[in-house]
Amino acid sequence: MFEQTFKNIDDILYKDSGADSELDYIGQTSWIMFLRYLDELEQDKADEAELEGKKYRFIIDEKFRWPNWAMPKGADGKIDHHVAMTGPDLIAFVDKELFPYLAGFKAATDDPQTLEYKIGEIFSELDNKIKSGYNLREILDYADELPFRSSKDKHELSHLYETKIKNMGNAGRNGGQYYTPRPLIRAMVAVTDPQIGETIYDGAAGSCGFLCESYEYMLERMDKSTKSLKTLQEKTFYGKEKKNLAYVIGIMNMILHGIETPNIIHTNTLGENIRDIQEKDRYHVILANPPFGGKERAEVQQNFDIKTGETAFLFMQHFIKSLKSGGRAAIVIKNTVLSNTDNASVALRKLLLESCNLHTVLDMPGGTFTGAGVKTVVLFFQKGEPTKNIWFYQLNPGRNMGKTNPLNDKDMAEFVELQKTKPESEQSWNLKVADVDTKTFDLSVKNPNTPEEAPLREPEDILEEMETLDKKTTELLSSIKSLI
Image (cartoon, rainbow, N blue to C red):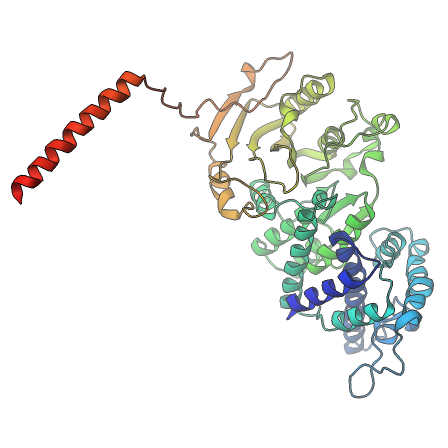
């Protein structure tokens, strides 16, 4: 049912002149779903207050609540078409009254962790792109059918929403930067093994896939006491995101996974001077896939000790600085970080090896990231002690990766298991840092255990084998004839 509802909404957006890509579809679906969710959340809180003999003060004013502007219903529980806005009236209300009202919440509070601030942030950054009020009326009708109250419903909605995020990434343009294959994320989470009481951070949060998967991992394994659940909800997951649409998608994704008021801040992470990061700003676990290939301006580079225009290299410095002593990280980054000979790359490798234990490097096959032509590695490290030994694992799923053959959990299973003991195999090997050239700190992926291919044979040897086989065949046929 839910899947069909999402498809129906997409079909309507496809017909509308204002939304023309998967990015637009998910952006428009997100703000509508958010308001639908907000109404359910407030109603739940009002019901709880009533049971306790208290009165709940709604965040949203009467006029702007979902049942009053989006779905006014009669006594029969059906939409009252005499009251419900549609056509140009509906678009005028949304654009000129609803969005400005909701955007105003941002100025009402300075605390980015409050629901009020999240409301204001979302509606300050998004626009309504739906041009036809008749199309919007249809979408609102469908959205009203989506239930948000039970955990089972939320789980199904979160799965469908993840599918939309994946489709957005597959659609190309800049959508791919919001989507990291979930089997890879789950493997990274399993290796870092976050525990209740620890803080988990992603400074390039995108659609918050790392935080959502960490939440699922921890929820499944922890003691579900009231205190633990409250800690998981409020004091565990933190993120920052620069892009408007990604910020909104990330917030919505976390809400659907069960986190009511996500600790996601809309900001440019690289705009923060890493010299200002203090112990209170540090985290136990960092999981991220920072954007790479970008070129940061000179003034942004001044926030870092190692100056470079490469976005991913600046993020690496931010992550190292943002880890607590003993903290663990798993970062997706392009594989050239291990071998580039420019000064910034060499300095970054030196910093990483001397300040952290880079214990594991996972080499991912080409095609892991749909639409991205770069090869990537995942760096697993722990802050506080220098690196002495690095275990490399070269993932080989035995097929060409791509949109029709995406990464799956089975592909990652051997890596997750072998990482515990770090053995030598045809796909894995160990490198002693004492053997690394201290001028370049080159950590290129060079598998010494790849089986050597048999050398090509000389033509005479091939002809000789053919003659031998012919002779055996003739003898075999003769013996068969003698038996007939």
